[in-house]
Image 1: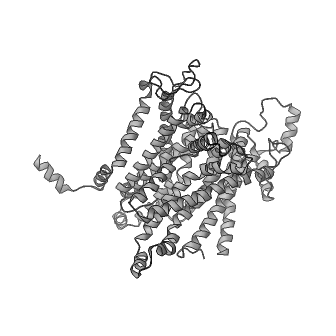
Image 2: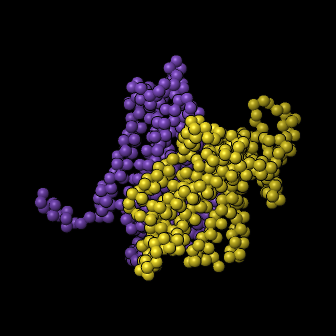
Image 3: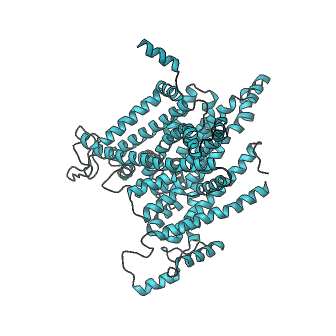
Length: 292
Length: 305
């Protein structure tokens, strides 16, 4: 055992282990991480955590204030708000994660190709990006949702396709500076093939900004989904997401205020936690920079 | 500089063309049309309607026709609001959105920059933590949460302003605050970050060593450079205010461009949808140009000659 420890000391620590240690010391980021894990688990286990169905109405009961049976109260149709918030978390988190994956996929590929190829292709691709930056994207998502039906899968793609621009820029900037590094030149001189250079030498160095920006994209996507659902263009009744719950709450603001309170609190806690985690990751993975 | 501006304005044309083309074919790809109303229209009238709006021609002819109209600055007649042109509708609704958005942006800038300055003046003390805590809360407060809360407090409980509508001049206050809060939070973070970056630099230390007073350094050296990140965020922020007004206009029942846009998309009012998208795109591009010019004026290292 002593031997092992000595060996571990001799081996030193990788950059990733350094980062892990740094983030473990960051209490706020760790608390956010555990909260998000809890939120995710609760969302996955939703059907086992509640006795009520998210669409079961109880018109005789109507809207009741929170009590021990209905922790978060019920809405005007007598549906249990606790259940609806739980199921809403499923939709909101799923949209957040899947749409972000779409955006990361597009953004990293676009940025890497543009940065690595360089020259005229790069200039053209960056020009394309500039054009896309001028697009009123929210309007486009609305057009898509209205015209092609309010389909949840379309929403993943539409929201993801909107959010990749900044990711592409970050990755491209990183790749451009990496590919002129001496170790890459050395690898090329040794006859390493292009795709090997990209996968072995360049992409691993791009991972940390990608991770950081991904954590910061998820809250943006969750907000955007809530925004669409709020306008009645996202998730459809009787399914719920945090956006639809808040929209319902707004209409009953004066009469049943608890209907808006709980979805708002859950949404905000999740967004705050994601932002803290993103900041923590940035400090841990990239201690020198403080880009906003 | 003038040359640069001319170049940029010319550069707008292909950008806008791509946007027009994309939108044009996107909305026509979708199932359904502007004349699918609940009540059935007799076929003769439908034919006349389609002829009037050139809907009976092949798609590429419609496209050419539309581009021709655009070249003359005409956005065409609305499909749904009879006898009204898109130009008229935008002309009427945009000032409303612009009032809300402009006031919101002003509020966001003033509050955000002040909070950022305040926080940066004593970094890592309570004077820093408190505004930054509020800024974090602010970035996580979407307009559709803060709007109803403000409405509940100031309109329902205190009755200082009316709940919704667009009649009195005070009706602009709550929507503007709703719209601006999130951006005030961003501006605060950007200003703080920008100033803290500068404070460590040599020329600031030199000024301190010369014995220049703290507030003079703040005004003459740090403020100008520290505002740069906020300035570059102005473009996206202004654009987001325009689109963010979709929700705010719905909540507060304001007859602005945003609400018309959602309605026109639901109605499949092709020309109105296209008009709105194009109009907003032009605004975004112009806003970015203004930001770049402001950048050159503030930062002597940036030059566009």
